[in-house]
Length: 88
Ligand SMILES: [Zn+2]
Image (cartoon, rainbow, N blue to C red):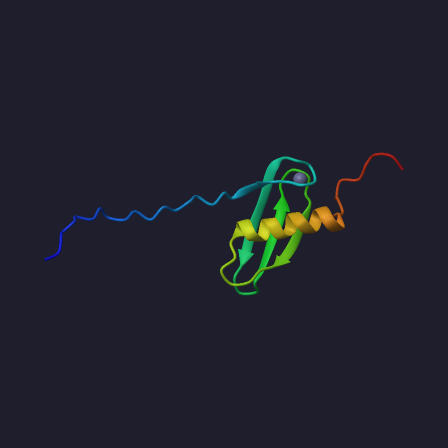
């Protein structure tokens, strides 16, 4: 004899994956990630300061992972900022 419990339908909680990220260079929320699944490369661009980069992603990685990888790279290696300071 089993107790029957009516189960509520399990709702799959899908966390919304943010599509715009904070730029480590200019600090603005303007970084977008576009993933090319064919090549396994995520292309990251900041719409504000124009900094960009590519990171290799593996299967199952999301844009958030790609962004984090890139973020770490920027912090450790530094990145070339396309906007040149006006001093010369
Ligand atoms: Zn930026």
